[in-house]
Image (cartoon, one colour):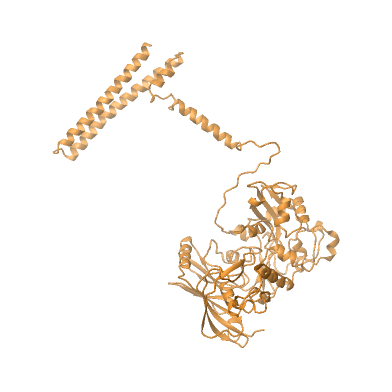
Amino acid sequence: MAWLTCVKGKVAGFSSLLCFVKRENNNFLRHLHRNKNVSVKTLGTQRTALNVRRNSAQVSFNFSKQQRCTQLNDMETKGATMEEDSCDTDSTVRTNCGKRKHEHTDQAARQGRGKKRKRGGKQLRPGERYVPPPQKRNPGVSFSQEHFAETSYYFEGGLRKVHPYYFDFKTYCKGRWVGKTLLEVFKSEFRAESLDYYNEAVKEGRIKLNETPVDDLNITLKNNDFLRNTVHRHEPPVSGQPMEVLVDDGEVVVVDKPGSLPVHPCGRFRHNTVIFILGKEKGLTGLHTVHRLDRLTSGVLLFARTLEVSQKLDEMVRERQLEKEYVCRVEGEFPEGEVVCEEPILVVSFRVGLCRVDPKGKESRTVFQRLSYNGRSSVVRCLPLTGRTHQIRVHLQFLGFPILNDPIYGSSAWGPNRAKGGLVGMSDEELLEALIEEHRSKESLHLLDLPDEEVSGKQGPKTECKVGAEEHHDQITVLESSGGACGDSSCKVPLGEVKAEGSQGLHKSTSAVESEGEMNGAQKEANSISDEAPRTAKSNYFVRDHLCGECKIVRPDPKEKDLIMYLHALRYKGADFEYSTRLPGWAKEDWLQD
């Protein structure tokens, strides 16, 4: 015990020395503070000297402590049993590796906890299926050359067309799907295809759950399950009119959008959209949408090149500092002079995009002025002062002058007066059903942009085909450009080819459209093909899929005039800019009406 007493004495002595040095330092500083004649330079020099003395004492103390620790370690090697007591006496004494003992314990505990998490947290019960955690996704939507190379365009009969292609629709399990089987989900929400199709797709390995091919549709879905459905997509044709870039100054891109083109991928459209055409043909990518135009509407469309410009223009839109001017051709003789409509507008159906005038709707204001009249129809200038959905079209219908070829608000489904003065005479459900029935009878449901079960399932194509039904093969009319019919064995596409041509999925905003779009909603009337074998309109070969019913159906091409509506965005004006286009042919005075 003599050595322990000696060590304690040395520690006490050094502690007393350190306290003495600190006390002398404080006295010295107080003395300097009272002496006002001491210069700043002299004070700094004395402080430096004092710090040197104090540091020397500290170094001496540390060196002695280091010697003490060395002695303790030597005695531990010889079998000393009092080391723990001596180390606990001073909380600042560390082990030979430079860490306190409790730090070793904490670090070991942390490592143990980390290893437990890596093993997957709680243990799975027998027969329970493991679901990997969801991966973070980029919230921004940006398309690159990888997406643009999925297919190629060709032009035929004044139409822009897209070759069929394989596409991966991807989605995480929705909350309403948890606890249901895949079979139940497909049966209730993805009715564009029959259950026979999904069973065949399972056999082909085209439906995957957490990147593993599904072998039984009766598997129960769990939260965070990741679904992938590989489909063969066909996209409806659009107008072949070229898209003109009016301005590209590094801050904004302004284009003259042809009618029939959606602005961005949605529903059955992906490559036949403004965003994809600009990226594929003009090399313009990473654009920010400032405003949108309806698919059938043509005219000025503005994009921002950078986020800063986009935010600036968005603020101008919110503050109503931008002036938008449209022209349209309406039925009948529109009154001369300025006509103002301030009727509130209510959305009836988001599925169809159907609106009507209703006191419960949002406030709206549009100013109209007639430009010309040819004895049957009038060209009208429109200034929407608010930005409601279908505002111009709804207000013109209310005034009794619907747009000449408006497939929704010019429809007879609204009744004999077509909702003039806001008089409908039926419920919203009855109105929606009447509108769908009218277009179904005309085989023009595509003009309503309905989900695919409405277009392909209820419209009733000219030739029906059941998946895997060889006995009906002689009744199928094959597309002319396919080079003839082929049996199931010759049309069958290897799964490896499907994987190679798959691409990134789309994500919709609303739950119903999101589900239909993400999984298989567009496979009946959607997009493109791989660019590994470029095609032309004259080619006698394109990839056909033996599971795809659309590959075996002939659909007549729409006429170009049926793909546009007589509504055109003529001018877009701000405080320091103005962008405009030429008048479309149907808006000129010498235009001949059919």
